[in-house]
Structure formats: C-alpha cells, structure tokens
Image (spheres, rainbow, N blue to C red):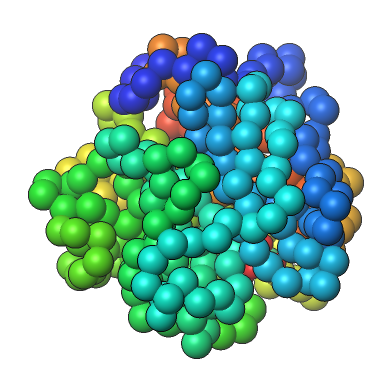
Length: 331
Ligand code: BMA
C-alpha cells in the first residue's frame, strides 16, 4: 500500500471505480465539467489547474478567446466541479519588462508554504516557463521566467528537494514540437535555475508507442512514501496527427531525476467524444491533481481536445499497482 504524503482532503471530488473497469483511471460520469463557453468571450477552456483553497478550491484556467488568443484566468469553486471563472484574465504585478504579455497558456498551480505558485507557458520571444505567486488568487506577483526559451510544461515540486526548489519541464521549439523529454532543474531562490538533469524521454520502437514522439510533465508531482508519482502526457504521431495520452512514473523521493518505475501502458487516452472531437482532436492533457492523504484518492484535471475540461479519478495504489503490472523495462 502506498501512502500519499500531504493533507487530508475530505471534500475531494470523487466517484467510485465502476465495476468491470479495466483501467487504473476512470472518468467522472458528468464530464466535461467546464464547457468551452464558461465565460462570455471564451472559445475553449482546457489545460487548467486547480488547488484546495479556503473552504473550497481555486484554480487558474486556460481560456482561449473568440479571437483565439491564449490567456490564463483565476476561478473559484465550492466543490471542485462547478467553477466560477473570472471574465478578465489575470493581471500580473512586477517588473514590466517581465509582465509584458505575449501569450500565456497551460498553467499549473503549486502550493509551497503559504504561497500558491503559478507556472505556465509564457510567450517571451518564444515559449518559456512563466512563474508567479499569489496568496489570495486576486493579486499575482510575477517573477523572472524560469528558463530561456524554448520550454513548456514547467511543473514545480510542492517542497524543496534538499535546500532547493525543484521543477520538471519539457524543453521545446517554437512550433508544435516534434520531440520532447522531461528534465529536472533546481533553484535556491526561484530566480536562478541550474542542476539540469535528464529524467526520462520518449520510447522508440514498439515497446510503448503511445509515448514515442514526446513526453512532458502534467500535474504537480504527488509525494508518496514510495517516491513521487509523476502523471505526464505522452504523444504519438499518427497519420491523423498527434494523439495525447496520459502516463505515470515513480521518481525517487530525494533524487527525483531517478526513475524508479514507469508504466508501459497509458493510463488514460482520448476515447470519449469530448476527448476525440474539438478544436484539436484526440488530446487528453493533464495539468492538475487533487489528492486526499487519508484515502489515497486522486482527482486528475485534464484538457479534452483543447476545448473543454474533464476530471478523472484514481488512487495512489491503483497507479503503483498498474506500473508494477505493466512495467516499462527501459525505465
Ligand atoms: C501542446 C500544447 C497544449 C495542447 C497540445 C495539443 O503543444 O499547445 O496546450 O493541448 O499541444 O494541441
């Protein structure tokens, strides 16, 4: 049995695993939870991140507008399922050299101490990792970009590793990057980043083809007594374009660049209509996970077909048992 290390969350959104399910992850029966027109000017609301906040939940949402520009918006919920998203995007405070907006998308939210840190793909002469913090989801303080362009999917660890903050990310290019591996970096102050280490990459050949084109970190890593559970996206290039599925790996607790386990099988992929049909078909893209340390329950928030947002459920035990049952030998 794996034990999640973190807070209890008795109000985590949850449904029991349906009988006969052959997968370690199962969808919320009323998906999608956020429609594309959740705010007046949105074309789509997807690839978004949520976190426990106050008596309920807060989040940062990717809402592409009807002019199809990409920005991130704060939102609030009592139950984690029904969301009120602000109609105006987040305005960041800070050095205007840094806060000047090109585009912002695919946010993650990570609590460290009493601050909620937001990371996102930030346009700065190409995509890189934007970083900001808030304590109230009203005022947001933007810090320096974490890395040089080009990079996407910067995901903080929820505590320091040794003396340093830690982040995994996926170095990229300016386009719809046809490659991508996961790297680990550390920083003493969230400004200067180094100790860049390779974590894991794509799988060539037939062993695990769903993750043969690129992989990138999804939700904030989940700490367990066995290591960090990293839910990530994996992509295959097909004759119909890229298909985005979800996988899971287990990283060493003290040296998270070391991969202890990794699933050969995907844990969720586009199969329902709202995952297969939308602005970008066949995308399931995880950006957040709520966890309950008392029960081991995990609720994964993911973008569906770059159009709407869904939830899926699992537990720490389900993920670890699945990894052990279908191990990727090269991990
Ligand atoms: C990636 C990002 C994601 C998106 C995915 C599929 O490169 O842009 O936001 O979900 O492509 O279109």
